[in-house]
Image 1 (tube, rainbow, N blue to C red):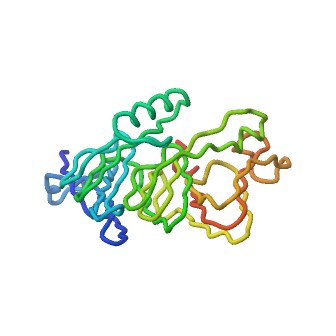
Image 2 (cartoon, helix red, strand yellow):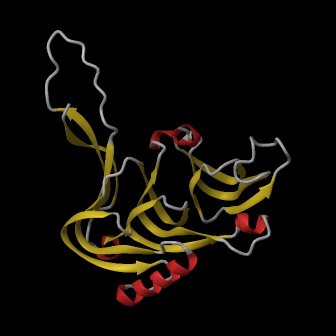
Image 3 (tube, one colour):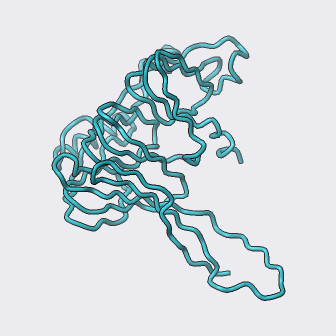
Length: 260
């Protein structure tokens, strides 16, 4: 059976004149079912696309996309390559490429300034929308999609696990700083995420269930007594620990979506 793809706004989030919109595409049959016959219909999985509506008002009229995420744009938007180590334009792009090659990480992003709408490539992953209010957010590898507003995209070197196992290498992750909107991608639907507001509290997690956390939290990887938490999915006998005041985006149902 042939299908046509119908797009509707699944969710959106606004801050000032900027807005993030998640468009969800579902497959609709092009032919009507035969009258009087039972017809089992197997539809293709849904796809999602992010629309980034940029206001074009000073620093608030800035957007950053993960490299390769853009499908098309509409409006008066200037495109520029930037990298997490600092710098912009061709020189910054080349410096970022060298840094990325040395570290194995894609540290350079694509920035846009002006007014208009950016559309990302469709994905079967879910899109999680959030807002920063003058703070910093550390994002898991591969989760960053886009941000808009007065937000700087940099990098954070996470030494937690490296220190726990006695290695000198750290994991490089995106770090968003400032005020504005952001979008992350995950196999977990937004409704299944828990945004935990820690206030001088401690959170210990067995497994890579955290997609992002605010920079005010102290992160460590700690050894755990055998059997204390699950099976030590972060490494044999290790758990991830978050202490202090801040927010954590936790996906407890992640194993249900990644188990085949």
